[in-house]
Length: 146
Image (tube, rainbow, N blue to C red; front, side):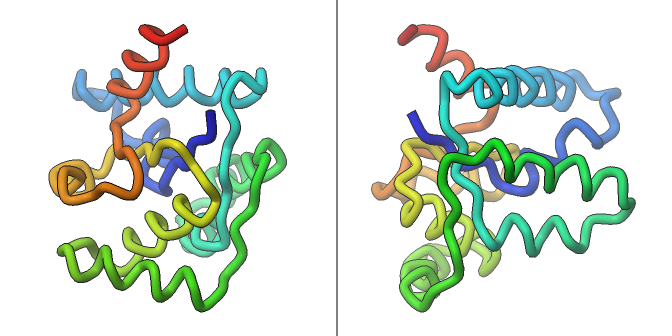
């Protein structure tokens, strides 16, 4: 099983954990990381993750997130097909950066696009190209199918 985690997902552990929903999403994301490290699931990484992470405030956070690249089983490089593919998502109301992430996930043949971004999750029903889930829903689904 291949997963693509967007930048919001990688940043979740660094968010204020006082809200229970954020804490649950963080715990689920950490479990996903364990599965990636244990090669029970495979991570797709992209140039877009590198780009967005490069503007993250705080060097320690940037370095911790960029370290996940070494756990990736696939890397999606920039190409014109990704930009063309992203346009279909922009046309469906997704933001430009989110659309590039979605296109990268598809090009990287991810089975799941995992995010904690409410905007993406709210529009996910418009997608037929890839399954979009939040971290908690993904854990629930994965544990049921194990």
